[in-house]
Image (tube, rainbow, N blue to C red):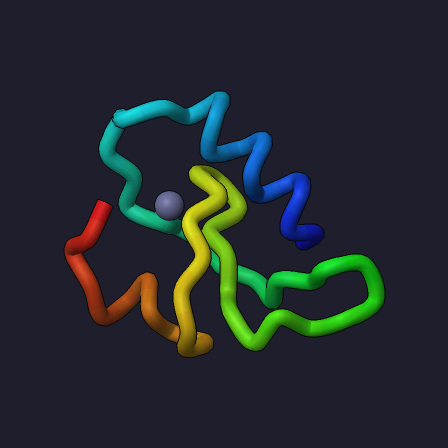
Amino acid sequence: MQMLAAAKLRQAWGDKPCDHPHIEQEYHFGSNTGEYVCTQRGKAKEGSDWNKRTSDP
Ligand SMILES: [Zn+2]
C-alpha cells in the first residue's frame, strides 16, 4: 500500500479501535518504507507480523 493511501485511511478511520486484520508492505512511490501498514486503519509499524504481536490500536 502507498504511504499516501495509508494516511487517507488514518484520517477516515479516526480514533476507533482496530484489530488490524491484515497488514501489508508500505511503499512511498516505488520505494519500500520498511514498514507494514494495516489495510483497515492505515497504521504503519516495523515488522511483518506486528498486528499479531500488539494490542496497540
Ligand atoms: Zn488496524
